[in-house]
Amino acid sequence: MLNQLSAFLGRFSLSRLGLTVGGALAIFGFVAYFMHRPTLNLIGFFYGIPLLLGGLALKAAELTPTPYQEPTPEAVAALRESQATDTQNQIRQDVTRYRYGQEAHLDDSLERLGLSPTDEERPRLVAIQEKAIAEHYALVLIFHSPLIDFATWQDRQDKIVQFFGPGIRVELTQPQEEQVNVALVSTPA
Image (cartoon, rainbow, N blue to C red):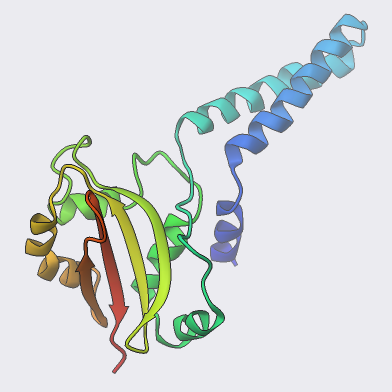
């Protein structure tokens, strides 16, 4: 139940909610103040302003969801239901929701894999894609990687396989300059 609530809330920007509700209550409070309605202006000052400030703080720490490069076909969604590993599902759910207090999606994972020596050099996850590769479910992570070359990614391929767990093989491709696609392909028994 708590997991479902977290997934539901992750689809909405809490900062936008705080800014909208807080802003409306703060304006309501100021209008009530100038209309000499002391009871109503307390709503704006005690609830509106703190919500507005909370919304601003969340906006400063907000990490937007990673978009899908293209919609997932129904056949691939069926493969996901039958073949996806817990790790693939967790990654997909984590990167496609709003996050707060993180610098980038998968920043800890990239650091542990040795693909993020500094914040400036860290590859940036720009999109994901779900597709079938040789009749197996694949979650493709599309990175903009201008400062980490493709050879470095290839050197870390075995480490990526170990990191993302059993039941996954990794295919690396470079479809264009400064882009690396990491396909996490399920290998059901």
